[in-house]
Length: 127
Image (cartoon, rainbow, N blue to C red):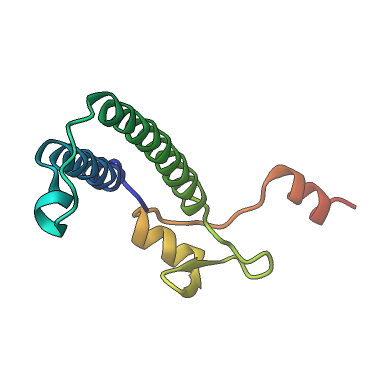
């Protein structure tokens, strides 16, 4: 199950990645890396283009991190479901079907006793 810290770690790596893209974009614009590394013609710094590209990257980063958080929230919701066999009432835990009593005892330290609810008692034992 994804905890808050795992979700924060995933989103943090996304933010770091987008931040590095912005840093390299500005380094390229300020130091004219294609001119020095590839021998391309020198170009002047284009501040407005760099600002616009940075805004696009921030917008994309916002949308991606928001979608990631939403997906992780849905995944956490789905992982919270407990699969129980409709017939024998065993629980799927770590890839194995175990009796519900065993699962509850191991996971929640709950002891189980058996009984009948009033409706079942009425249906089974009333004449």
